[in-house]
Image 1 (spheres, rainbow, N blue to C red):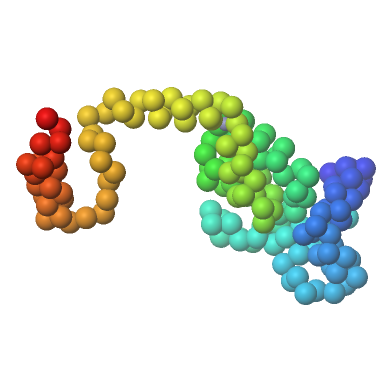
Image 2: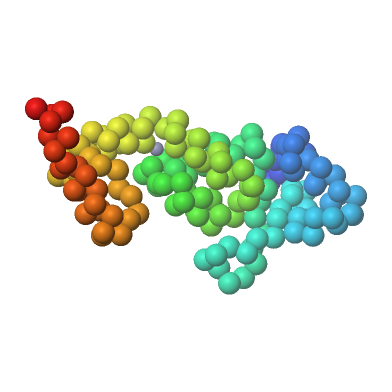
Length: 159
Ligand SMILES: [Zn+2]
């Protein structure tokens, strides 16, 4: 990381509403946030990713860059899901407490993903599955439902 880039990133971190106060404390040599530390003039966080056995040092992504970073990963992975995108975000060595929330809104705003969601929804009625909402029930109550569905009063109103 060259000096000018890290200076810009550090500035963005300091302006971040969550990272800014942490930066200040860590810079002063106070450690109420033992997981955070400054390396090459930039704030990092010690992380223990699920896929890894060793501790990693993740760059603290400021909110202003977060959406762009997540979207880039989402697109590079051919419109990956929220979970997959977040996993890669972690694997790239980034950290943000807002990553999940922002990623959900990114996917909602993605035109390509919205289109495939609509296509999925249009396909759904063609399936032979009955329209009744699926409920977690035992077999007995389902049979009872079926009987209620075929009561004479129902037939009367339908006729
Ligand atoms: Zn997408």
